[in-house]
Length: 417
Image 1 (tube, rainbow, N blue to C red):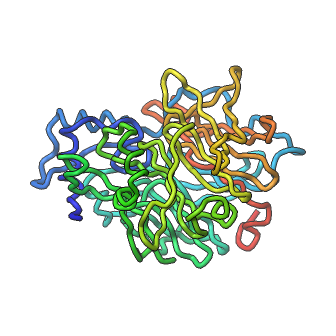
Image 2 (cartoon, rainbow, N blue to C red; image 1 turned 90 degrees about the horizontal axis):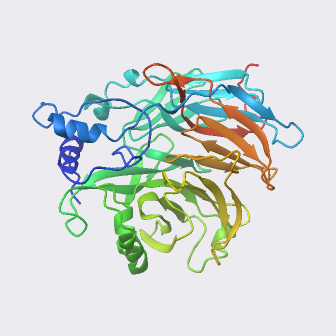
Image 3 (tube, one colour; image 1 turned 90 degrees about the vertical axis):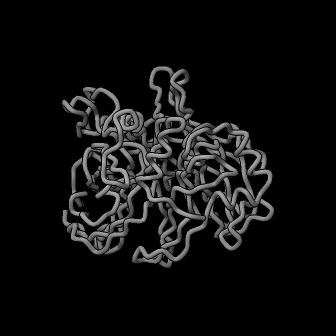
């Protein structure tokens, strides 16, 4: 399938229905610092088109900053011990901090240090890190939302960079290979008369070189049931799936689902409100599920073979997100946390969760600039508010894209305390 030049495709797509919030061409949510899209002839987009694209509304913060800052709750007896790896939307930086919020280490690599990225030259500025992975020597793999991947040393020197339009999340395999999502504007008359944004499941080597890309549109179209579910979802954006997470299927989950094998890939398709499992050997959807969740993120298998996900709900009326665990066979919800009337939580875009070794769940409420740890019975035993500020007047709390809990000794080989 022919890939269209990004700038041309965006201009063409902008003449159709406007993209909804969290449906930006980068597929990554906040933050865009500016928007200036040149046409193929070097001229900027006309004001009407520019206004429509600007209506995507991605910023580095969403909500007025509260009085709360840093760690506001910590039940040491019930919280999972460890360090916290923290990503803030205010800058291109990752931070290691202890359970009290003390900063122990940072990595940083500015976007203006990436002048040869073709997307930077086109003016698409996405100024945040969506996910990171720290290696044993302190080097770090960074995903710039919608732009690509960068590997840095422990002291933030560049190892390599790949402008491959990687977006949302990635997974580092035991052998060093990298599983992630990429996307391309393409012409698919059977889907839309206008160009559409097609997500790809991408396998990279340990140095970020692309080994193969598998079209998720092709995979869905090979499964009539999955294609029917997608078409019934009513998505009208040019970002037809808005895939937003990848996770390798483990043996426990595969044992519960006929036709599913370990090593296949669980993918969340946000705009279709569905999950799919793709067999990379045939690039075919072998399992799909919709229902019970809406505009979800971060679907992943649990060690016992259930499916954990962030259910955004994405409703200005409802305004209540939840983290949920489902039985993959019955699709019954076996655990859920949605806060309470007194302490609700909601993020319309983004949001991730991590199942911890002690059974607690670490939840990131991206738009609220908050991360918190809950026990299986729903007690909040650790809570952190982003101390960084965003917005033109620094009056917004900066978004949080991720907080990972790592073992206390995970960085002992290189971290100076």
